[in-house]
Length: 195
Image (cartoon, rainbow, N blue to C red):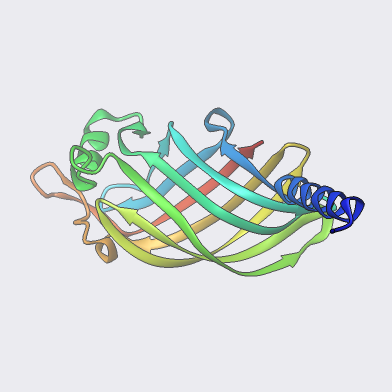
């Protein structure tokens, strides 16, 4: 007959290990109202900026001693029609270029954390790979972000430069093609994941 106290000990150890891991890999969700994402670009008339008002997503963060040690299942999305520039004409051209009626969201899904480097002040630099999907066109991308864990919040901050044509997007034009948007854009994001 097996030793009951040994079995109970093993079960308790497994339960404690499960609880410990679930604490390390707690799930966080994007807090849209405290997060920002802006897209910057150029045109033959002037530089432009458009901001996202609806951000969504979730992630599992492995935290230890106030630092991000690993990330699993990170997703992030922008509702295309929440992109606003303050000019309805530009907004509509943007929605058309991004095929908003057919593809309601721009999405990013993390596939691999390549390297995490601790920085001063409890922050760390994360080099990651993921799949960015714009207007239904998915591309593997690499980006470097800064993560800052504080209490029940993990802040992810970074930027990404891209060409619209690399996602099969025709840069928008206006006024019968006399105003042309540049192909290069820069995306800047400051996203809060809350437990």
